Structures are given as C-alpha cells and as structure tokens.
Length: 293
Image 1 (cartoon, helix red, strand yellow):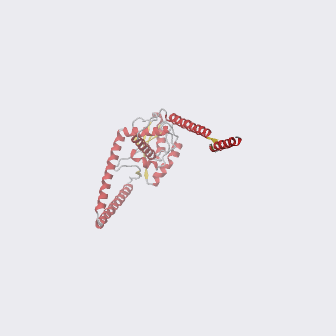
Image 2 (cartoon, helix red, strand yellow; image 1 turned 45 degrees about the vertical axis):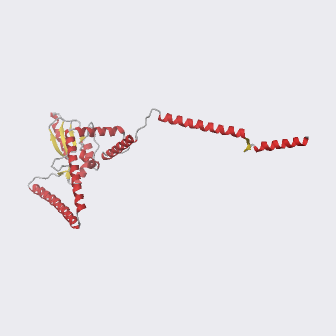
Image 3 (cartoon, one colour; image 1 turned 90 degrees about the horizontal axis):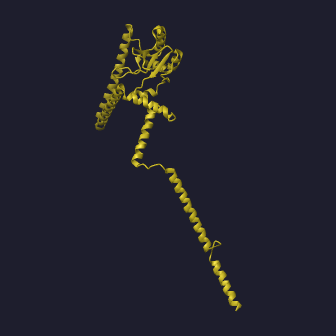
C-alpha cells in the first residue's frame, strides 16, 4: 500500500511544477498582471488630469480662425519690417509707432497720400499687365519693337536730366539757382519735408514727418533719433544731423524742414543764430503759425 501512495505523491509534485510560470504560480502571475494593469490605468488617469488642467479655461478654435490668426501674424511681421521695427523692439514702442502711423493715415494729408499710393499701384498694375500682354503676344519682331521703345524712353529720361542741368547752369550764370535740388520731391514738384523744427529760448526742438509712401526709403537713411520734447543745443543739433547732411551732399540734394519761431521778441538775435545753425544742414520753409509742439 505504501508504494501506490508514494506514486500518487510524485504525480502531485509533477502536476504542481507544471502550473508554474517563470517561477510563479498561475494565481500569482494573474495577480501581477492585474497590478500592472491597475498601474497603467492610474497613469493614464494622471495624464488625462494633467491635460485637462493645461487646457482648462481655454476654448478650441476652428481651422479657419487659426488660418486668420496666422495671416494676421504674417501681416504684422511684414508691417514691422517695413517700419524698420526689429523683433526685439518692445511692444509699447511698436504700439506707439503704430498709433502714429494710424493718426497720420486718418489725417487729411495721410488720406490724400494713401489715395495717391493706391492710384499709383493701380497704374503700375495696368502697365505691368499691358507689358506682359505685349511680350506674350509678340513674335521676334514685336519683342525687338518693345526693346526699342524702352531704349527710346531711357534716352528721353537722359535728355530731360541734361536739360535740367542746363537750366541750372543758366540760372547760376545770372546769379540764381545756387541751391541744391530737394532730396524728397513728388512728380508734381511738391516737396516732402523731413522735420518740423522749433527754435525756442532753450535751443532747438525737432519732430519727424511721417510719409507713408517713403517708409522703405526712410529706413535706408541715417536719420537722427529725435524726441519732440528734447531741447538740443546748436552743437548737439549739428552732431546729430551730420550723417543725414553728408548723405544729401553725396546725392547732390538737400532735405527740407519747416521752421517755427517760438522765441520772444527780445530774443530775435538768438532766433537768427539758431536759424543759421539749421540752415547749415537743411533748406527751410518758414511758417508764421505757432509752434505745433
């Protein structure tokens, strides 16, 4: 009877060993798997809570609205570049510059300038389309005609430049026409002034004109930094405006400013002295109105 019992015990140990997985029983392995699953569920819940916490109080936007915001950001970047504002410029300075541009654009002269700019753009578009059409429909003979027309136009411009210099020499010969040409002048002959200048008891104050059509051109000029509230001595005025004066000399022209007299009656000798200082670097137009700033 002992032998059969021993055999059954051996079979029991063999069956027990067959129920092991990596040294664990099936029950222990199941408990471990359940524990791992609980950890994964807990981790997923933590991630979901963090995501909800991050976006709490925020609302989703539509793809169309996102494109509008991206377009607005691109327009803002282009505007900043055109105004000469760098990416490191403080936001308050950019807003101040934007308010100045907005005020100028809403003013009478600003509206006129914008209208003229739009008209010029339309003219350029029309000319460009006409030229493209002419080039697209022209054969070798037509293309040669277009080249000849452009060549004749260049001759015409060169002749007009020569005529202008001839008139300047004639005026100089009779004691007139000694002044340099205006640096900023419109096709109709109107002069664009660079600064308003106030001559006062304490010295010289300056305020820059904003010309919407000359923003890109202005960015290439060595313009002095001015503050309408700052009073400059004659020496400081000469020092700051020296670079822009040297540029005008190199280009055989002069920039114009509008001058206002804010000195009292008994200080007219001082006014004349300050006026002479300004005349050293700019041509002027005297304005009898009160100082605007």
